[in-house]
Image (tube, chains in turn purple, yellow, orange, brown):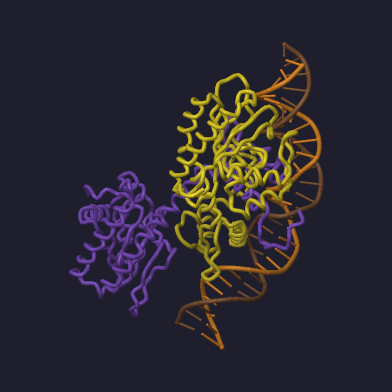
Length: 261
Length: 261
DNA sequence: GATCGAATTCCGCAACACGAAACCCTTGTT
DNA sequence: AACAAGGGTTTCGTGTTGCGGAATTCGATC
């Protein structure tokens, strides 16, 4: 292959396999090895290997009966996850701006990752003190208000699995006792919002409320973070109530029943 | 890498690149090279190459400002296309069954591919004569009623580009003259359905009507195919009218305005 | 301006992806 | 029922090219 003066860092097997993936995906329905091979002018053996690899990774689906390939679950799942995140971000943005103005503190939006939370949006209060998170950052579940809000609304089995993982100590105040954490989570489930005081970052605190999807599953959480000194108990309670209210509004837009908690 | 006794046909670079793709996609927002590298335990250089390749293919998006990666347009586009095809198939199925019973002939559903049409569903009449298409097959646009129905409703520029491609001769009756084809397409645009007589397969004919999306773009077409001998002109006209009606109904479900034709 | 972390680039090596051909199915044909 | 044909799998020897450590550049931050 002459390989045009393209990016020298392109790994050819990967590139060609992606072409195969694209062809199969765009085909609209099952397609056979030979057809892919002919269409892309890639030798049968090589095409075969790519189709196997793509199927093994779940990006394609291999129908053993007809020996043909279709788009796999992995692609659909990723697409769904992405659409869901985009939707949450779009829904949350106006409410976040509102919250930021109301309390003049930074407002964060995070989704549940695998054992962590990932910040997908944040609106900073333009006060002098710099805050901690950046979009794309991951933080542990158990040391953040965002994570605790999510943990409290997770199905029992998944919450247990989550807490079985080693709990990292972020600061001297990070909760590490299983009992203590579970007690707090029950509290969070009752009040509808979570609080964290210097457990993730020294001198900083955070209040978070969960965003639930149509199955009542906590897919994301909304939070307000501030220096400890600027957030007395009374204000924190007020912020918690507002967050719970606003998060519930977003949940409703995702199809969640505002029903029993 | 120990490589468990997995499928021996798995191409490692491809597999590892897919893992990178998945990680970035599921992350929910921009993620940097080093983070991916650490998370997946793949050396920085290699990870870099995969990220470059995935971005070059459009599966990821490289934000040059922050030097971070997100899900790219290719993934979203594929997902959208897939969802659209699934939707069309689901919407069309009941109508297809109905049509099949009404005329006791095979009913076909195809989407527009790149220069071809691809059968995505068909319901066979259980008559003795075997029909020609199978799900997943591609046929030329200009020699099928399905393709002509789509061509007639394509934006002018794209139709011209389409007809500039070499036109394959499927049978002695296949239309090859540009003038003749364009005359027929204008006719199709007026009547709302296309007819093909032995132009794609000797002894077989087909009648097709386009399915339009919310932009009025012909994404698919519905057709009835039969042996030439079984479909006299009068019946064909009746079938054309029914197809037009049913296809319009499906188009309406896709958000197409039933307005001007 | 100095320092640090992160992203690129370089380079030599050998792992491993490649593809021709052989093999083995299943499907349709006479 | 045997045969042919087409498509999928497997084998195997070759040399391409992907790999990753280390050096370098880039761009923040103090």
